[in-house]
Length: 147
Image (cartoon, rainbow, N blue to C red; front, side, top):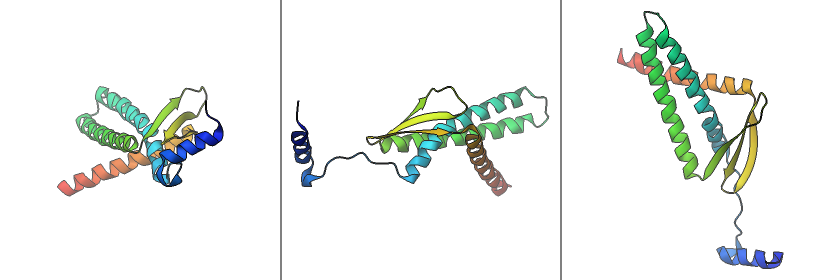
């Protein structure tokens, strides 16, 4: 067991230049990645559910809708994989809190810094709607280039 002064001295010796190791607060970009890491799986679930409904429909354009749905799922899945890879590289972990209310609750650890956050369901829906709109716009632009 060490007294406070001894612990501080040992920490200073272990970090050259007298710098003590401190937890790093996430940047704005990292907070956006954390948000994406929790919202993109919800978006994937929504797309998958709608894709199943489309598959069961009798709409004559069903095959087109299914193809676009799969393209959309692939894009979102790739985005999620990139976000998760970048979070791992930056030593950031995100965990879901299982509280029972209308909001989505999470906590994260960012290089030693820990915090909690909540996303209201309406805000989550708006963010998801914006994300899906951007992906659809990109798919549409690529289709227009090919025509």
